[in-house]
Image (cartoon, rainbow, N blue to C red; front, side, top):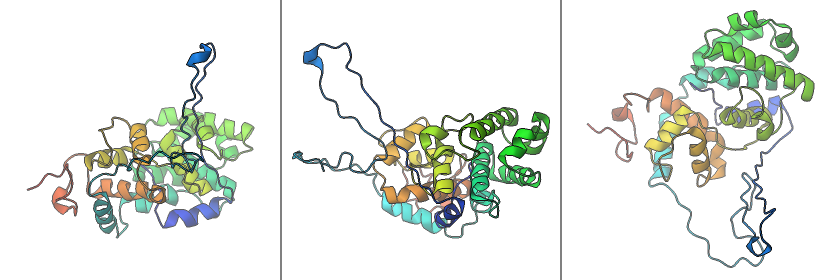
Amino acid sequence: MCAAVSAGGGRAAARRLGRARGTAGVSQVHSTAGLPRRSRRRKSIAIAYESGQGDGAEQGTSEPQRPRWEPRDWRQQLEHIREMRRSRDAPVDEMGVERCYDSSAPPQVMRYQVLLSLMLSSQTKDQVTSAAMLRLRQHGLTVDSILQMDDATLGQIIYPVGFWRNKVKYIKQTTAILKEKYGGDIPRTVEELVQLPGVGPKMAHLAMNIAWDSVSGIAVDTHVHRITNRLKWVKKETRHPEETRVALEDWLPRDLWREINWLLVGFGQQTCLPVNPRCNECLNQDICPAAKRQ
């Protein structure tokens, strides 16, 4: 269902794609316009992905910091998943986004191909996405070639990816924006990426990782969402992937953000299945809150 980047291969692949690094920063501004003067209080504004937030580093801060919440047994669970993923033989390892672009193409073209493969991957198995990308590349997969291609031809090429009709529309719209606004390249920030038609947060964070070698956040797809809820890696059960991303980034060490998507996607494809998970084959059977023990 998802295309992801491998922990080891992602770094090398990203260096081929470009030198520029980008980070995503999202700030929320609270307006006090129109309020009585006495009610105007300074509020603490959290800025995502910036270092030094909430660490008590500001001068004059003497309040003791509360212990950071961590899930029970998460380090042992993580090591077990790494062990189970050691063979790297899941669909994501062989046909994920990292395998879909033309590594001999110019960096700008490779970045465009990464973005398109991510757009195609939504609600689509890696095998289907990989095959569609191969057919597109055989027709010359560049910004100009897609703009010159009629919708019917594009639809025939990418079929049977999930929601292919909508994706034809999104690909054409996004490609036109890239041509006009970014000179044929892809944006360097999450904020700009998610403004593109058909590009969601998961795709944006993976694009930043693979295309720009920048860890802007955790890419949460259905596998990551399902597994982290089963393992109780979130304080409270989350209903949507974006909720899960925020919950994970609140405690998971940042040096694991790049690895976690690839790791859990493959684990979800092979062992922790959506229906009838193979708990009897899982090394976490005895320490997983959701395990079906026999």
